[in-house]
Amino acid sequence: MGKINTYAINLARRTDRKASLISEFKGRNEFQLTVVPAIAHKVGAIGLWQTICQIIQKVCNDDIDNILICEDDHVFTEAYTSNRLIRAINQSRKYDADILLGGVSWFDQVLQVDKNLFWVDRFTGTQFMLIYRKFYEKILEADLGKGGADRKISSLTDGIFVMYPYISVQKEFGYSDVTKKNEKKGWVTELFDNGSEKLAQLDSVRKFYGFNTK
Image (tube, rainbow, N blue to C red; front, side, top):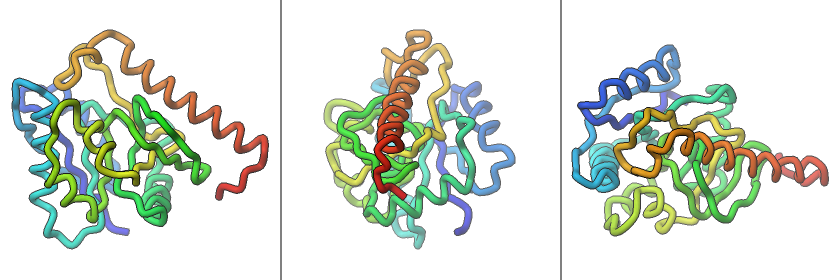
């Protein structure tokens, strides 16, 4: 497998976020990183969605199986390894995935399909989102409507998977360009911690009963 084509979204004025982002990928040669200037919009969620669509439009004719889109508040967790990510990419492809997430701040229904992979039906958190090529057109044809990119994507596909343990969470900068509620100190960290703990509990049940996940 070659380098993962990675597009990281950053508002030009958010130089602190850009520095953090570049630091996260420094020395990780499995990624081919491109920092993409975010489309500025008075509604941050709309600007993010427009930027995601712009990225996909540029690569939709390329002969690559997937792309990784990150936001500039993404940080790797201690659980991250390149082998774990590559394994998850290959595993989720076998389950006909459209989206593979490195970590989410919230999910609704969930089902463990592999010891390191869960299916989810709805989620929030697009800071580390691998999109498979077969899903490009569906995103490009969609209208964001009300809500954010994560909610819209949740409505477009049943093929959403999240890695376990999380390999990505959101860094708190004290402000948010998309979701104002996320400006509350500690709120984002708490969301990711709660989601991770729920998956850990489900994985403990699997281990206890010896469920046959690979």
